[in-house]
Structure formats: structure tokens, C-alpha cells
Length: 216
Length: 255
Image (cartoon, rainbow over all chains, first blue to last red; front, top):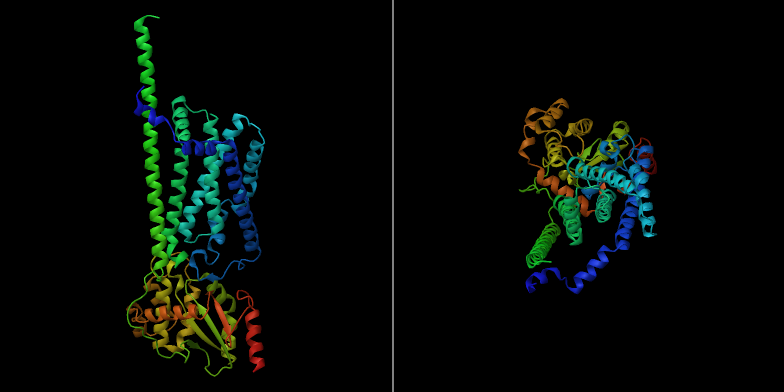
């Protein structure tokens, strides 16, 4: 075997220590736990707001100088209760399930494959929904609410960690070649790079659209 | 094992190792590229944030040009509606795009009419344009306030009627707002003479509106509607009828 070939395979000590940390089950589940708790808290705040708004439609009114989060626009838009009830209720119903999954897994429970696949499917739907709302808030409603943004980011993190676990544990009934490729992908932490890029794009979109109002 | 098969096994192993090394190299490249993308994004974010915090101007460009204040303003630069000798002054800061201001008008319009008719209150209106960002780039707040200022300048008796008509047809926040033609039609319906309406699109008073906005912020106004009764902030519920009337009448009683 020649030296150059070997060099490509040998990670530096920092790399390997970082990889150990990053790929450890505890890190994965704790991240998911923190993100889902953040999501639950944000959902709770938004649900309480929605109730207040229902009691008194003017409660959230009053236009602030900071036009980004002005006028209670997000809370009173039709998109905020697209299913006929405040979207935040969805978070109240689903996030505790994720929290339970994370806590139980931290305690060493291994869930059956079908359960993890179901969780993946449902959470993917949730992710799509969260991004649809984000898009609506940015481009149709024109306002941004910090709690909604918290949910967008937290949902993204939970989705990535859940996908990570399901690829690592080969839960997704994928064709072998795809599974092998994805395993290589997460082993070399490319998923981590992807999620960082993803979140930075999100931040960039927000500052591009609202930077003037946020920082002026 | 024959020599031949040993060679074949060795070649196979070598091929596998090379394939693995190739994959590892590809991943390494992907990692580096990812790192570059991340650095690029961070740099872009920093640039945008620095630019946003450096420039003091809001996203929508400020109207340029000489500040021309409409005639018929009060000494403090407000637009007067009602009897100038009425004892109680009711100062209102508002934006034509602000839904809360629309709700305020809808709740209190009638009562304000009555209090003005009875000579109890005079209104001092201060139209500001901080929601220009919320009309998809058409600067509805500024356009509406400029039209309002033109009416103040040319047809001062009709300011309150025009003001109320604008709120009666208030567009939703975040939409393009009313077009110039629609604003003109509302003014015409309110009885504003054609020569005044024709001046709306000149934008003569846009710099003045920007000035009023800046002054409002400097004076500590943090949102709309902001209502001051005889100079004191009104802290009651501005969205249901009652509180405001009470506050105005008690101010009248104190005098």
C-alpha cells in the first residue's frame, strides 16, 4: 500500500475526537431532545397567543416600529390556523412524542423499525409544513415571528437527527446501494455540513429580507 | 492456492482498497467544499448584517427632495381637524397601512365625529410612513400620507372626511395597497376638488411625511396608533369604543 492512499483514510486526532463526540448516541439524542423541547416551548407560547387572540381579536394588535414583527400579522393570518385550529396545537401534540423517543433512547430503549419509520414519515410531513409556513410568513404575510422561527430551526434539527439515526440503524428499508451511500455520507459528517449550510441559508434569507428592519 | 489465484485475490484487494480510498478522497473533497460553502455563507451573512446596521436608512428609500410642508398645519406641525378652539387636543400618530390604526378608526370614528361636532375635541393628526416596507415596494404609507397632505394643503375642510374614507377602504397589511388611481377616486368621492387630486402623484409632500415620521420616532413614539390627549399618552383600550370618549370627556371636565 502506498503512503498517499493511506493519508486519505487517516483522520487527524482532532477529527477523530470530534467524530466520536458527534456520532455518539448521547449527542444525537440530546440534540434531538433539546430541539424538541425548544419546539414544544415555542408551540406552547404560540398556542397561548392564539387563544388570547381568539378571545380578543385586538389583543395582539398595535403596530410596532419594528415592522418585522409588527401588527400581530402572523398570528391572525389564515395560514396560522390552516387546519381550522391554531397550527401551534400540532406542535403541542407531536413534540412530546419526539421528546419521549429521545428520552427513552437515551435510557437505552431500542424502538422497533416500523415505529422509527413511522416517526420519520410523520416528521418529514411536519418539516414540509414548517417550511411552508416559513415561506408564507416571509413572502405572503411579510412578517416574521421569533417563536415561529424557533420552531423552523428546531424542526430542522430534529428532522436531521432523526434521519441520521434511521440511516445509521438502517431503519428505512432503502435499496442497499442507497443505504451504503448514505451511511458513508453520515460517517464522513457530510450530513452535519449539510445541516449547517441549511441553517445558514435560513439565516441569510432572514437577514437579507429583514436585515434593515432588524438591525437598522 | 495457486499463484494465479493469489495474484487475483491481491488484485481484488488492491482494487477494493483503491475504491475505498477514492470514496474517502471524494468525501474529503465534499467536506472541503462544504466548509467553503459554510465560510461563504457566514461571510455573506456578516456582510448583510453589517450593511443593514451601518446604513441608517430603512429598507425603503426615503423620498428625496426639498421638504415642503402643507399649508394649514398647527403651530406644532400637526394636521388640524375640527374646531381649532375646542378645549381638548387629541393627537393621533398613525400609518395608513397599519391595521391597528384601522381598528382604532373603526371603533372610535363616530365618537370622534361627535366630539368634534360638539366642539369638545380638536384632532391633531400626524400621518407617518414607517410601514412602507409592508406594501410590496409600492410605499403605500407614504403615498397615502402624501395624498392626505395635499388635501390638507388644498382642501383643509375635507381632511377628516378623506382620512376616514382612506381607512374605510384600508388595504390589508403586506399587500400592494391602493393604487394612486384608487386613492384619487376616494378623494374625489369625498369631495376633494380635481385640481387638488391631480397633485397627489407629484409627491410634493413625501419628504414632509418622512420628516413627520422621523420626528415622531425622535419624540418617543414606538408604534401606531399612538394617541395623546392634551399631550398625555392615552393608555386605555383604543380598539373598543368607550375608553377614548371617557378620557376625552374627563379632560374636557378638568378644564
